[in-house]
Amino acid sequence: MQAIYFDQYGPADVLRYGDQPTPVPNAGQVLVRVRASSVNPIDWKVRQGDLKLLTGTKFPKIPGRDVAGEVAAVGDNVTRFSVGDLVFGMHSEGVGGANAEYALLSDDAAAFIPEKLSFEEAAAVPLAALTALQALRDKGLLLSGNRVLINGASGGVGTFAVQIAKALGAGEVTGVCGPDNAELVRSLGADRVLNHHEHDFTKDLSRYDLIFDAVAKSSYRASRPALRHKGRYVTTDPNPFDMVAGKLASTVSDKKMNVLLAKDRGTDMALIAAWLQAGAIRPVIAKTFPLPETAEAQRFSESGKAAGKIVLTVA
Image (cartoon, rainbow, N blue to C red):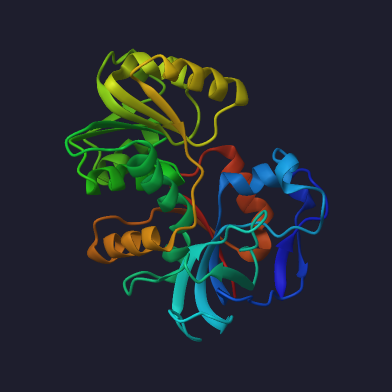
């Protein structure tokens, strides 16, 4: 199969497009003929070597988490899916593996693509939507009527977080983004939109029940004054110092900090698929690149200028 891969850590220039072995499904896995994938910040952080203590030094590595395509083969004990089914989900093994013509998904992590979605739209969903859902519901313990702030509301995770907060019953959703993306964030259901160049949300004393820092650009320490009694702060990628300091501080405060690492949970994908089919949420695509241009797509992601998800199309 053709795939994006790298043989060493480094800048986007280390990415190559060429032949790699086609994976074989084990028991409980499906092999997907990938029609579209995506780029997430975790992809270029792995490529740069930021997580090499976890990802190791075995090469080559194929990046990518988001899979959308057709089931090409099934492993033993797979009963939910058959060859030809259109599925999407998050590839969670190792460093990824989705930026290729074929990729594996766990049977219990995949879901059927809603009829109204294209492959490109479906590929924009899994990691970002799972992160938003699990951060708000599981770590943030979002309750009906809560005041919620999404920092980074125009990004891949943030665009889903605004919509999912509303779907979960938030009373007021505030989105923080740049001025160019304010209308987009309002169109997704935000009740308030703050320009991060002009407004420091951490000065909104005791306003929010839940702050979700979808871009890890703030901190628990800075955000704590903006939380109400029993407020919750959730982040996706804190620096180690802030994580330790925040956890220690939250043990003696009624305002809590949590860190979210998304899980490839099929029941959550099914819920997300139902919301997508009903029109309660929708993917936002910033730009689409063909698979061989993944290096350029990762550079665009690194620029921080993408509003929504960066999608890769696979021929």
